[in-house]
Length: 237
Image 1 (tube, rainbow, N blue to C red):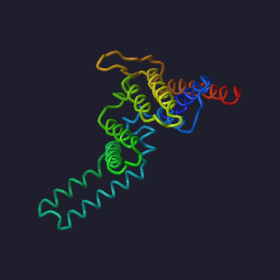
Image 2: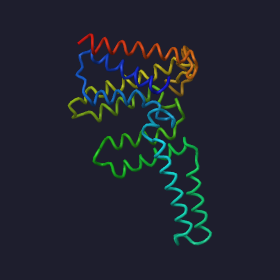
Image 3: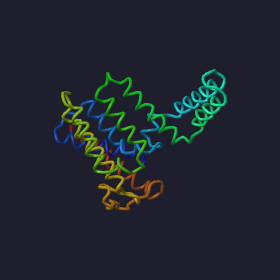
């Protein structure tokens, strides 16, 4: 499914279920549910989550910075000839990497920055940095689209939520929303491999992303989710 569909369906169903269960929904709970609905696709540089966090202007800024650094290394007396040329070419060439690779580079740089300068946000800085590093190393629909990913994210939220007023609900909202994303992806032709290295694939083949049939199935799922949200938060109040 597309990112916007995941956002609507996973978040809507999660919050509706929690409301029916009598949970007190707070801003952090809603935010975690929304983030978790997109988080499995953090391993895809062109996903809605990554494109929102690393927009095109940030990539252009990085490219210009790298080109400027290459020019500086070439003319400045930093390294003797011909190493100044070698360094300039190495750094300058990074600026011309494909957008996907540049986004992964930005994610790694953000991870380094969080570890180095994000101590004020502990433990979230370490959690975010770890997730960013893992996301740059694994293939799409790999580790993040497994039950291990669900368990890991839920456990992180449980630990991080200790001591917070709504902390006991964060792991429920995050774990459920994350799991619903995987369930939605299991409807596609590609499906998911929930328990690697076991070869078992969860693949219901009800839709294919980018096709008319896939768009129709997504539309039906989004519509049903919106009806559920209206019944829960408007009619059911």
